[in-house]
Amino acid sequence: MADTALHLTAMPAGRRKTRMLLALSVLLAAASALWLFQGLGEGNRAFILQLRAVKLGALLVVAAAVAVSTMLFQTVAANRVLTPSIMGFDSLYVLLQTAMVAGLGVAGFAAIPQLTKFLAELVLMCGLAVLLFGTLLGRGTRDIGRTILTGVILGIMFRSAAGLLARLIDPNEYAVVQAASTVSFTRADPVLLPIGAGLTAAAIGVALWLAPRLDVLALGRDTAVSLGLRHGRMVVVTLALVALLVSVATALVGPLSVFGSPAFFGLVIAGLAHALARSHRHDVLLPAAVLIAANILVIGQMVFERLLGQQAALSVVIEFAGGLFFLYLLLKGRIR
Amino acid sequence: MIQLSGISHRIGGAPILNDITAELPRGKLTALIGPNGAGKSTLLRLIGRLEPLQQGSIHIDEMDLTRTPSVDLARRLAVLGQQTQIASRLRLSDLVAFGRWPHHQGRATARDRKITAEALETFGLGDLSHRFLDEVSGGQAQRAYLAMTFAQDTDWLLLDEPLNNLDMSHARGLMSRLSGLVGSAGKSVVVVVHEVNYAAAWADHIVALKDGRIAATGTPDEVLNAGTLSALYDTEIEVARHQGRPLVLHH
Ligand SMILES: Nc1ncnc2c1ncn2[C@@H]1O[C@H](COP(=O)(O)OP(=O)(O)OP(=O)(O)O)[C@@H](O)[C@H]1O
Ligand SMILES: [Mg+2]
View (cartoon, rainbow over the protein chains, first blue to last red):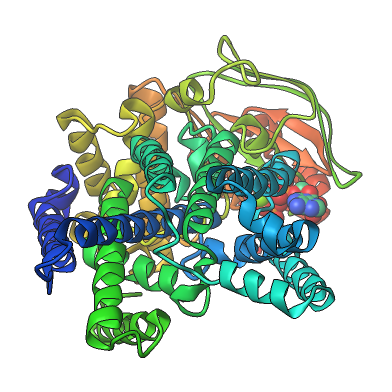
């Protein structure tokens, strides 16, 4: 036993981990192929294929963004039950939609170019995050709990502000707000998707590059500092990546809480990633989380659309299937 | 030599350390003693740059603490705090391996793995190395933290109450190992200890703190006498001698 443990630390990622990542990749490839080609009729093949490809792209981008942002957030917060969705990004997004409709009217809202809207939402959401995380810097990065609490309270305030504003506008406008505030993987159009995918890939690339430092960050402040990590800077960089990932995903498809009670999807993914990776190393954990999230989303959406004929909500599929698997691992003692 | 000059420290307006100036000699085992709340941990944390320095200066050998990159310090000085809490679920072997991080920053070499394995053996953790940190006893966890600090293989070792949770034999083993590091490997060690007899038996140099000030410094013979200790701890303390060293009687 002792022998295998030493062996595992001795090998960079370990063969078992490579095999696990490979299996998840194969599963994802199969699910994606099924998604693209299943029931593809005779007419209009190219058109349907393109439609499906864009939607698949959106699913993958969102899955990757949610997975990595959750893992990074948990590493910074040194907590396995928090996810960035408690930080109020969703509420800010809904407030922005409501404010735009209230300010510009239905016609004006519809006339905003998609790209402008996307970029403005990105800048505003990241701006809020910088403000929030900036308070961290001022406190010498000691008070992460307080920053998170501030985010939660801001989120509640945004939500009530949006609710208040919604009551002031007329029902037609409200219907537009509602449509804009529900998640939609078809909303991601072929222009925005590559930008969102590029930003997400860049953020994940940086996170992977920082993986060894993230491993140290996860040890907590005192140990990280004594090992020579520039802790304050690392916390800020990591939170900036979280903010970028969450903002991109939200601006691309809408409020992410559609994946079930806001924290649930991230929680399931993080729990599964730890259970399957059985490693503290982020160069294993991050890819595992991305692959798990992508599999759950693609398969879940496929079941939802094609098996259930859109009769249920995606969140129900995810909460039920993800929850069952999670419980199974929990009972087997693989998650702790 | 660690040179402390004019160090003062406040927490929320309350003075914790007052104008501390002292030298911690190189190549010696220095014991930091004093009553609860004297400021020992605060001072050690300042030297280990776990707290930002508010006033005064600290030089570790030729390095100015506030001007030296943190990772350069980590290759010269290892610090183990009084309470170390680690949130992530780690096996003991993984924890100890982190001691090598300042040297390889992510890409462990064969030498790093060898030093890690040796540190595990040294602290009698070979059979436990696959266990998770939350699956071992308090003393075994403490030994794992110590092994990590040893694996860092630095000139300077700062340990805050390393004897915490250790049984008699492991406590004695640790002190003799520290003394060995100083004697044969030319390292310099600073330990906070409460059991003054460990200081009496093993230390070369003693710094006594009280109420955020230096109360006494010197060799064990100079500091560990009835007068100084009684005043330091506000308790009647007798000191006898045993095998040429002070033996403090306080029960
Ligand atoms: N975060 C804090 N806020 C307020 N006061 C603090 C804080 N940390 C320490 N102190 C105070 O600073 C003083 C010195 O604390 P320190 O931990 O350095 O003492 P110590 O000598 O290590 O004591 P012990 O032997 O109990 O470990 C104490 O009076 C303590 O109450
Ligand atoms: Mg202390």
